[in-house]
Length: 315
Image (cartoon, rainbow, N blue to C red; front, top):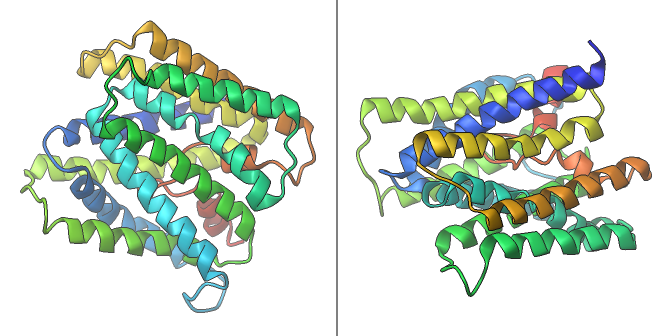
């Protein structure tokens, strides 16, 4: 099987598992606070991640060389997880994905001041069209916007800032620091929230939080295999297949039927994201923040795939 085809198929499978991961979050969100779900999901994901962290061959302490960028990235990952979990809990799946798909647009915008990236007029036009798509999905003035919509936007922005931050850091930091700091910060922040809003969880629901952790890791490892098999520019667009999963899962489990405006806005966002990916593919290899971001939002329950790859390869 050709490498790019294999990579695309593995990425499709990974995105399907990620979508199942998100559906369980939504199911649990009907009865439990989002912060509580995130806390237990991250707690169950820590043991296998800790085993991987032991493979880090780099000697040193847990003190980062660039505390500002490591701290900023950690806060962005934590915020992406909190906002994303909440958005999935209260909004239709297709609507959440439509907004989260705007992350590459924000990455492109942030890459100018943070990375010194040169963005040409064609990519700026694509960004403008994508942002128009976000407005079409949200329809301010016609639809009552709630905290869920704001949370989804914040999740997309936070994910973008986290992706740009790790591009800024490069390989200057140990992998264990980049993975462990967000986990520690998440345990502190979400753990504190349990004293404010905690609902006792049934055994089956607690098992589902563990399943979220397992699915996040499995999907991450499949994504690693996808990027090892195929070129990033061919694998990354498979992210958008999650919209099909969202429509299917929403119809099966939540009686959700995305309207024409949501689908139109999602089409504009996806189209602009794909255009940016293709333009980056044709550009200099060192200036590809969107392609390198791997598109899938990084959270404490779904660590960045290339960081896991570093540990597996002992890089």
